[in-house]
Length: 206
Image 1 (cartoon, rainbow, N blue to C red):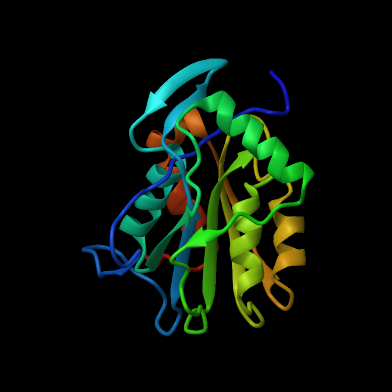
Image 2: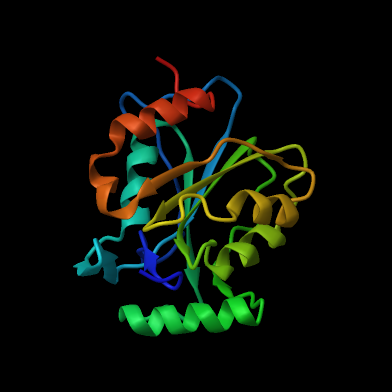
């Protein structure tokens, strides 16, 4: 294994408004606490236990769907103006270039504001120890003062990577709360872990 692995990634493509808000049976959030789940995800060829697998829905998207099924939240899917390749090696190479250049890849249809939210869950894979650079593009765009930010990641080796440090720098004035890191290969059976984390960060009751 090398530090250049990417895992736990998908991209969702949806036309029109990319933010959705809906109440779901059994989903709860503490009264008065509004939650935004903003996630970047990429489908296609992915790392899988040392090999490769082709994912129709990527691991981070699976995790985001799991979270949004458990708590009442608005979901925004972060999508790149220049989509990432379905080819694993091409995406690894692009990510290395973007990290080396400290790039800020452009986002398609970003939300106008996040002012109405108290809690923001920033979801992404971990690529080469950190979140993809498009997450910095998103985080630096908004005023996070007074909000609580929780990193949410899927990974091959690096857990939360450098997300706590990176979001502390990108979201001045925010409280960086407990993050959630789920191994990409295990995300589809992680509901108990996700539910426990949501209770600990006080967005799931019962």
